[in-house]
Structures are given as structure tokens and as C-alpha cells.
Length: 413
Image 1 (cartoon, rainbow, N blue to C red):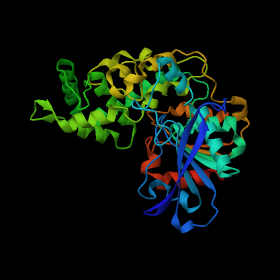
Image 2: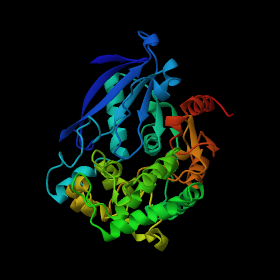
Image 3: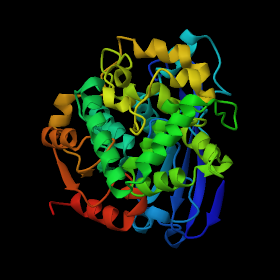
Image 4: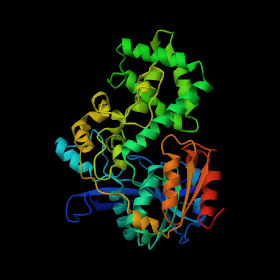
């Protein structure tokens, strides 16, 4: 089916793929992707650009117009992939998941970057594409390096925005660095809005002393409130958090319905349980992470005024409605000791595919030091490091980021 909207046409594609690509005759799932192009290029045989969304567990963008794809659509058709388990790709949610804890854990083992790359290769062959380019946003960059490890012959060029990972670091190394980044963002937030420290403390103390229920029936605990710090790594995250905190109270005595609905939506994982279940496993190669963020949590993150960031904790699977069906499976996966490697270091060192990447100096989610180390170890990577933007620059400043990366892929700038 093809539909038209302002500045683009969109064509839906559906593919049947094996759940386990190592067992092609076994259970199958559906994978959905949406092809978009500028109507002005209709009839032209343009090259393909595959978009790999951030996450894990995030569906591809739903667009109302060209948005941040305007520059790319001048020369390419773009395939927006709903990675397996997301959006319209046999979704994984509390409503759809079935089976015992062991069965759910075994099912979700097939939803990491290696399986997503195998899906991409199935789709590429199905579309009759000899080579395509990829654009990896955040976690999509992680997938890109797995793709370069597995099937570089399928790739003409790769672009990465805020998603160059450490190649052989454990989750423990990553979270040691990430906690420091979050601490810095929280300090910057309070420097910008010094009055918010008292407001945040008041909310936290109220939640500790009073049983406050969210509209879906979950209790809003202090820990869940503090996960709102996740937004501090985006361009408008401090403002977003500030206004939420500033307008939290109704007549000064109770938290407003608007506040409670906003917190419920922001922290509920309703359509992204894969993010919670598999987030630490983005860094698991061999041994499981064993709840790395929980084990390494510094003492000062228990302070009422301190927020957390991109961390997943065991308590989430008890307190959050959409995650409760995954609790037993998440525990099993956290301690699994046989996670396959995601990157081929020798193959990456010899890489010939042009890779143009931007790393954000103050990125709260992807450590810039690890990104620089990876760029030095992988062949043909041109890395642009900047402090002009936060992690969401591809969304909010595409007119500046996209042309520069596409030029960078053609040669040094």
C-alpha cells in the first residue's frame, strides 16, 4: 500500500523471517518496514538508505512530512525499519507475550543486534538490492557495527549519529562512565534552574510519605519519579523536566493529574518493554550483565534531588505494569552466561566501507571516549566530535548534521 502525505510518499512492506535465523525452517515472525521517498523523484531508480532506529525496542519514526529526511530524500529512497518486536513487527508487549519465564527468555534472546542484522539481510535480498547505505541513530549505530562485522559486502556507506559503541567493554565499564555523565547533567540542570532542587526534593519526600497512584494503577515511587532524569540528555530535556516539576502541584497540596499522566507515559514502557529487558544486553558479550546498573549505583544517586538516566533496575519489573510479565525472563537473561559476540574486531579493523559518524562530546547515553576509541580501531571511520548538540541532534538539527555527514563519507573535512 502506498499513501501520500506532505512532501513524501510512503509504501508499506511486510516480510516473513525466521525467529532464529540459525533455524530457517522453524518459527517465523513478521517484520515491517516503510519505504519513503520524495514525490519529485517518482519513477527514478534511486539508491536505498536503510534507517536503523535507536533503542533497543524503539519502532521507526512515524512521519507527517519529510522532517529530518529532507536532505537524504533528494538522492535516496529511505526504508524505515520497525526492528523485530517493535511497531508492526510482531510486537513484544505485555499484551502479546506468552509462555513461561524460560520460554519468554528464550524468545527474547533472538532480539539483539545480530538478529536485526539478519533481518536486514533478508529484506535486502527480498527487495533485490545489491548494496544499500545505512543510517544508524543511537542504538542503530550499534547495529551498524554488527552489520559491518557480519555482512560488509552489503553496505555501500554507513552514517551514524550518536551511536558509536565501545566494542569490547562490559556493561560494568559502560555504567561506571554513564553514572558520571548523568551526575554532570543533573548538576547542570540545577545550575540552570536552581529553584528546582527544592521542588524535586518536595516531590520525592511526598512520594516517600504518601501512597500516590498513577492513572493506570501503578504506585508512583521515588525511584520511578527519578527515572525522569532520562530526558536530561536531549536538547530540550532540561526545559521539559523543569516545566513538569514547576507545575506539579494542584493548589499546593496534591500532584496534578497532568503531572501524573505525564510521568506514567514517560516511565511506563508500554510499547518498549524490549528496551527494559535487553538494554544491558547491548553490552553483553559472553557473560550476562547481572543487573550492572543496580550493582554499580553510587550512593549519591539515592539522594532525593538526584535523578537517574538510561539505567534499568530490577525493581522496575515489580513496580511497572507493562514490565511485570517479563520479570522472570529478565532475571534469567541477566545471569545468562552464553551471550554471543556482537562485533568481529579483526573484520572491523580491516573495514573498507566508508563510515561517517558524529559523536556528541556531552552525550549522556553514549560515552564519547569509547566512541573515539572505536573510531581509531575500525577501518575507514571518519568521526566528527562536537559539543554543539545533544544526543537528539538528528531529530532537531538534521539540516546541519545530515549534509555534513554525507559529505564526510565522501572524504575528510
